[in-house]
Length: 187
Image (cartoon, rainbow, N blue to C red):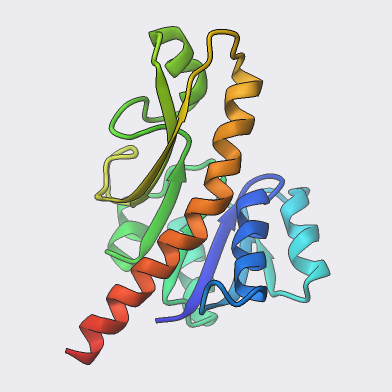
């Protein structure tokens, strides 16, 4: 299991972190395709600059499934993909979909996690890589990284510190998931 399908909706900074880790030899995988639900997503330009396969698809489970299968994807990585996937998609790739979320789950699932943390007066926040299930940010946790919430933090400053950790954590977590899958296949 080494072929990644990466789903994005925006700038693609986590996709770039994954691609950089592959290029540097820190992650033994290949990116089979980068898919966005938005034609103007800057991350698509970054993928094209790297010579990677790209696709723009509306969020219809059957279309996403077909495209990922066409590229023989082993692991799906949601990297700023801002759509909820349906049961059909989750079932098609059960146990092979990862997401990165900007909070220490189970705290602050869903949108605006950094704002939720600030409003709650949290002293720590961070990011979580987890498997995707049918719930909202509720799947089994793979790996987490924490950052302190500072007294003068804004959503932007907290988000920037969390994003730094996301870029480090996501490739590490993907590597661990791939290694575990390889061990299972050999057993």
